[in-house]
Image (cartoon, rainbow, N blue to C red; front, side):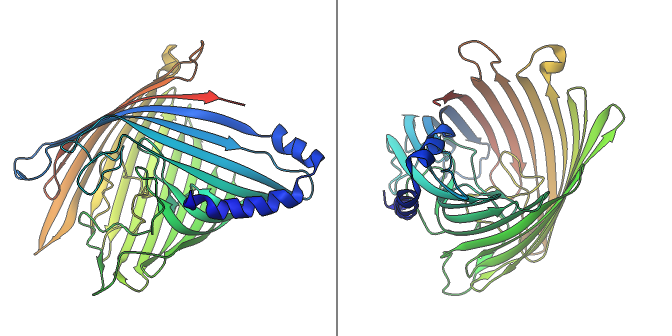
Length: 420
């Protein structure tokens, strides 16, 4: 596939020069592979009477296959390796009238193909405690968090250098030039999200397209219970973003208190109007299988939160349906988790949360509000021939006075089969 050309070229050159017989032994000795199976049903029922010409329901069912093969590194001061990511999605049930869940691709005429697939190749190099990867990447950092909430994960094409030479300090540098969305098999130009009431617009004649996304950042373990990170990201000619994050864990009585403080600042970088400061704080107290959480989030500036299209926004109030990231939006969250292992049922978990947002800038001096309630029940088999087989039900109810109301259900059966 053409998306693999960059990785193949690098891999062929590096591996061909470095693979002696002894080095190859280490290359295969430390390799690992697994096949993840995902059976995914999703239903979105729009609960409004004001959109007679719009789709009333989105409902699809699909089977996904994700093959991950990771080599070890060749011996020597500089080691070389190679990774393969193969993914395929099969349609089990869909139609023109019910497509659009994000599980499957949708053609120009609304047709849904029977299947789609892709192959991602990554060449990697390791020297001391530093690692360079070139090819298919799935970054998970504050300025870019890849999306893995549907059948197949979102991927990017580019390079990433991670440096861990100083104890407690991790440095990240990256350059990406293409994105492959979670329900697509093609690499595309990156763009930013402009939907909802984020009120992010483009300058006259400009296109929502970027040649690259570059980022750099550092995470430092300040103390045993405190970590701090700073990242900078730039989407070519569209926006620049700074992101600061502090995470603190404090033993408190018989439990522990986890605090997560996030601050982001984004401004336009040429062809877009972006002006946003996002502040978020989540605190969670854990005790004997229980977790009690409180989250607060506020958007300031002339626009909402800036991010690459299709990615997960790194926000405390980003949940199943909404992210509460519109212009001027203020939101709060209450969350409760329980692990039934405390009652002698390991593998069974429960989560529920409620988020309410208001003060959304709608124009003409009016403000909007929204709320969402989520519930997740999951169970993973702990033993037997089907150990690690997982079942998850995700349910959400979202109501708003500026976007369509929706009730949503996701049923996921997953199993990862070790191949090596």
